[in-house]
Length: 379
Image (cartoon, rainbow, N blue to C red; front, side, top):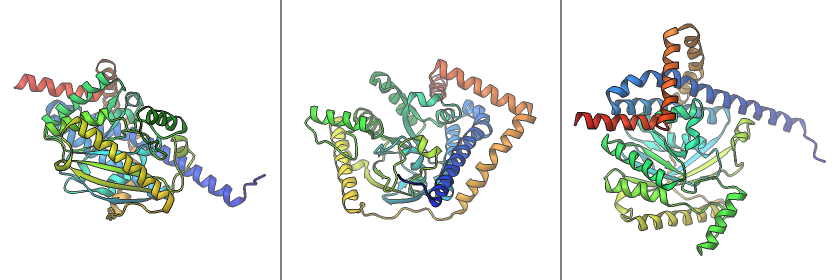
């Protein structure tokens, strides 16, 4: 029988404390950011969609520094980011393998280290997420106001959702990143089995380290953006946890963080991207075959794809984020208790947001509908 020694016990307790503290600070910062930064922005949206988009992107991207700081300083996660940088002057699609349910949480530091160019702190990344996530109090609300993309996995509805998004960002000439998990779900025994069945039925290779991608969303999104001249590059992003795989949120809550995260970015410019839907489908399948081979080689030999190390120097931003977002929840709580006008502002904005979730299925749809109304009325 294995007996837990004192060193193991204290290490486990330190991990648990770090996990609980990380989860509390992470969620408190989101709620505070929603109340103090996002709620007062509604009048800006009524005046200018572009200005509203810039400000919400600035706030959200500055918040991304906070989980980056917490993961690196509190949880002692080491991020090794290599390959091609992401440019702020471009609109890019980031294709990432979906190893765990918590991948998005570990991708914020990768964006911090890999993004270069002017306006870095306002160059935002939008995730394509399951529709139900928008209903999570705080986190789901902020992502709605940050124009994340929510899909239902019903293609006719999702196609309309993507098209409205494409039309909107084209109209306002909006440069940003769109992060896609083409596999549609994380890698588990169940999803691996489903992927193997798909491979057998379609005469394809069974994958061990990734799932076969679902091309429909990527093909439509990239094809339409290319037609509109609003896509500059596609990045193939490979994410690996060499020592510990944080499979779900419970791993984070209990402090079972990976000590090392490896991320490699390979850039494909618009000039070399296929222009047909079939070509884009083949492009995606080729990237996933290469990704399977890359991860297999890493676990067999320890070799990761060569490339430039992407590292953002200057810890002052990290420490500034630690101070600001740690203190902000207590300032927010003070004003919620002692300021009637601020409390009423937050309550009124929340009531509007909840109403848009019922009527329009999200505040992001309200933002786009408002733009269409302005466009029709003014022009």
